[in-house]
Image 1 (cartoon, one colour):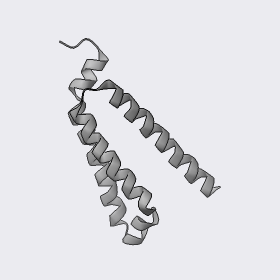
Image 2 (image 1 turned 90 degrees about the vertical axis):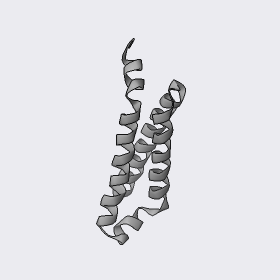
Image 3 (image 1 turned 60 degrees about the horizontal axis):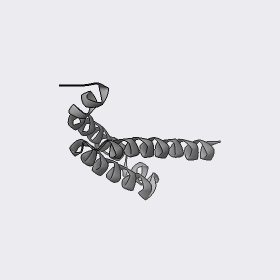
Image 4 (image 1 turned 180 degrees about the vertical axis):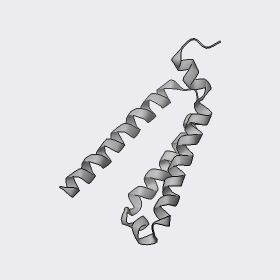
Length: 92
């Protein structure tokens, strides 16, 4: 019996995080298609970020631990915001 959004999310977490991991992997393929020079222009941070994110998506898909999910979401959002700020600062 579902008691709310929390149970709804947790009951569908496997396909959600699997989709998220596949989309990150496809981003690597897309980046590589644009050429090796383009791929390596992102540096090792890109590879570490994608690898870590895919592994954490696997953990998120396999656990119902809400603390992990909350920390994962907050950390991912803060990291993405830092990438945006660093990229915007470099471009301006």
